[in-house]
Image (cartoon, rainbow, N blue to C red; front, top):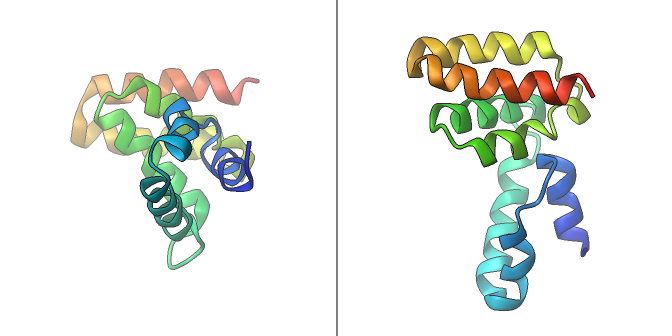
Length: 114
């Protein structure tokens, strides 16, 4: 795994296979995606922790089980607590409904109990 993919894995917890394949299939697109990823996840007005919580909640709201799990996998590594994630998922519930909360809560319980 190259350094950019390793960095992505550190941020999101699990790198989707398509990223590894994209490097060979479309190097220009790979370079663009990785550059955007580095820019998005860099520290700014929002911390990496806040961005991770937002990412998990968006994935839960979209009911994307794979994305919820991939994003949640990196949350404990950033020092995010189960209480913080649960509170954010309650906001997601308010705006996106019970299925979004259930998606996020199930992943949170799995990853924070490891």
